[in-house]
Structures are given as C-alpha cells and as structure tokens.
Length: 260
Image 1 (tube, rainbow, N blue to C red):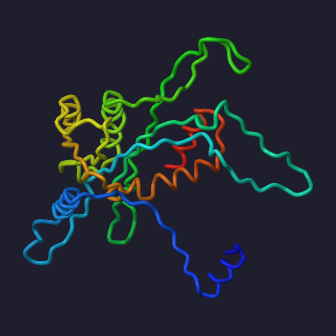
Image 2: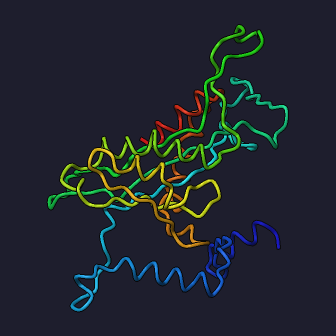
Image 3: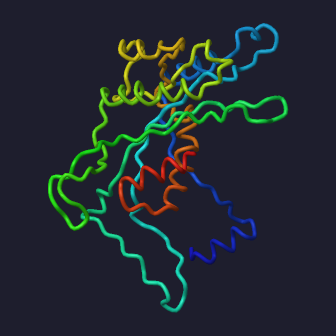
C-alpha cells in the first residue's frame, strides 16, 4: 500500500493509527509481587472505611540513565539558498557516541489548599564523572589540564558513594522541615549496581541529622512504577538535545539545566 493511500485512509477514518511498545514480560510471581506492592500502598487508617492510597510524599524515586552527547541521526531546519552550511558531526565510531550516566531523584510535589507550590519534589540529578589531568598535549589543551571524563562502569561502590555524598545531602537540604521526622524511602530499581536495603555504610549515613532515610526496591520487571522511567528522563533528554553540547562538561550542564 502506498504511503499516500495510508494517509488518505487515516484521514477518512477507515484506518486507525496505533503506536505499540514492548511491555515487560511478567511471570506469575512478578504479578503477585506487583499486586502486593500496590496493596501495601493503601492507607491502613482508611482500609475499613473507604480504602485510599497513601500520597507517597515520602517516597523518593531514584533511577539512572545514560545521556548521549548527540543522537546518531539528527534533523536540522536550515535557511534556503545555501545561506547556512550543513552541520558536520563526526565521531570515531557512531556506535560509541560519548555518553554520561546520571542518577536522578524526585518525589511527589506538594501544594497547599490554594494550589501554591510548597515543595517542587525535585531533589536533584547527579552525573557519574571524574576530573582527571590530561596526559598529553593537544591542539585544545596542554598536558595536565583537568578534564571531565565519564565513568563508563558504574559499580555498587560508585552508586553508594553517589547516594551518600550527593543524594542524601540534597534530601536534607531540600526536604520540608515539617515532614523531616517521618521515614523517607528511597525507591530504586532492581539493578546490579544498586546497593541492598541492609547496606551498613548507607544506613549509618542515612541516620545523620535526625533523618530516617531507608532504601527499598520496586517490584521486578516494573519500570512503570517509577515516574522517572515514565516521563522525566524522556523530557530531560529532549530538552538536552536542544542545547547541542559538544563536550562532556557541556553535556552535564545541559542535563542539569533541563532537569531544573
């Protein structure tokens, strides 16, 4: 069927467009755990009257995502008549485009009875990068100049350090004072680099300054239970691509601005 014929049939209503994406393949065990998770979110004070879900104001969603310096295929809109030169982009290998992993942390925003924002819920977004001196001279820098380099392999030790040194201080700095005495749950996905709920080093750091911050996992094969997977990451990436960064430092700045 020709493309123009498809468009005509969509327009006259004889064809219905439908976008379809692959869903997680859930086992019976996965389904039971998901159901138990949802039931655990019911407010126990309402269960015998009018069951209602908790507001989850104290559940911080954390997740990691790779952000690429540039897309392999990019669309540009140029002035006609050759007034602008065609953009030229090149990498040694298009399959290894420079990228940086970020950890984002968000929680349900809070508003008063008049709809005025009390807390945005945006804890922060943190890059997995290191600063190292360059080993050789080049046309762009001299040897010894500090460079920002992505951490390509994020391990449990690196994840733990990010949580303790960046995420926890950000929570303490931004969390509403009126709610700081209640437990705060960091909900993470079941990935290998994530530390366990009983990690002693994290537990010790999480109890500082009177806070009670705990780790928890969302059910297996359930990316739809994390608001970062559902929308935040895609929106941030769309905004980041508008900045057209050329260096790692520019990519980090673009992602952080997009998050804000």
